[in-house]
Length: 147
Image (cartoon, rainbow, N blue to C red):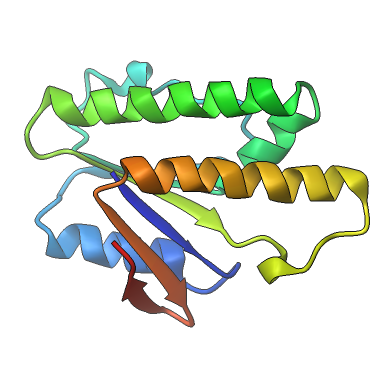
């Protein structure tokens, strides 16, 4: 698993697509999570997809928080990441690129719901970074490898 973060509209998806091709991945799919509450990649299991780029992870978290508690959201996202890791392990040359934008760049939001979203996203991104094989930050289309 490869986690990519950075500012909104800083070229994370474009960088991930280029990087995936450079690594030899051929058949991929971009999944936009901006309006999603959950994703089921099992429906793609018959296809020859060897990589997924999932962008908008922070918005998926926000939508879940609107309907469930912080703890439930964290548990769901942990399970979601484990399912993605299992999908990767099924075949040798598979990779999931999870893209999550930085929220507020350290500025604490005034609104309680926005603070919870920022905090939940930070906690979940930390869990993802622990599981990820590689982590990059993208600013202005340039990457900095953290892990």
